[in-house]
Length: 223
Image 1 (cartoon, one colour):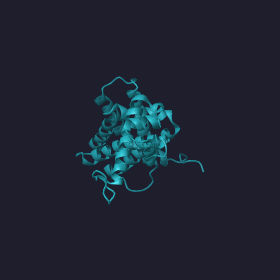
Image 2 (tube, one colour; image 1 turned 90 degrees about the horizontal axis):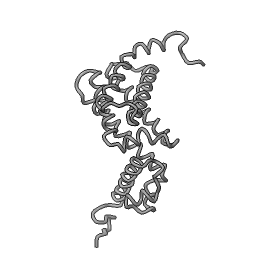
Image 3 (cartoon, one colour; image 1 turned 120 degrees about the vertical axis):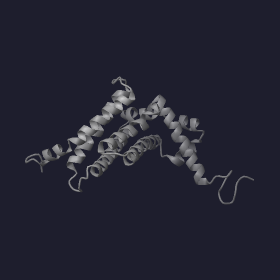
Image 4 (cartoon, rainbow, N blue to C red; image 1 turned 60 degrees about the horizontal axis):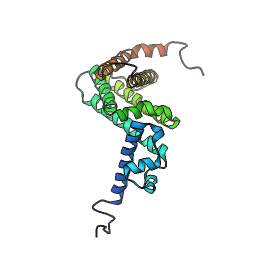
């Protein structure tokens, strides 16, 4: 008998089996969406590829939108964590740490073309994924705000300049990477990383000027 009274079956618990099924569904979705596009994602197709019964699909996800959102969150989260780790562990000053963070983020996403496709291209085919993509970009911006504050020893206070800077960086960098992935910027990845890193460093160097601009009379938001 392989089933035990404590809920284990062939050495795994109910929760472990549920997590294994969820993992297989995410891996199957990565393959389908990353190679064929979001339109190719169906419950039947992802279940067949994951070797998971349809009833177990709904055990993990409420529908295809939830599956695609979880996949995008995972891709973005992994890249963000790698960037955070690189910036924390890289020795040197602010420039070295910023460059390390940029490199880690871009490499993590683009090492697997399927992940790059999901993170930068497929989101444009879905309003729901676009919202998730924007949320991911805001998390990148928040990381940049946090790290810039630490690296430049900026005291707590008004984050208006930092927020503007972070949004400019993340938006500009994301669009450049998308152009590169689409073949519109014909350079090798190390060159792309260098371009983005130079942009980030140059923008951070502009922080004092942005701060002064915001403080000028007549530049505050209308009431």
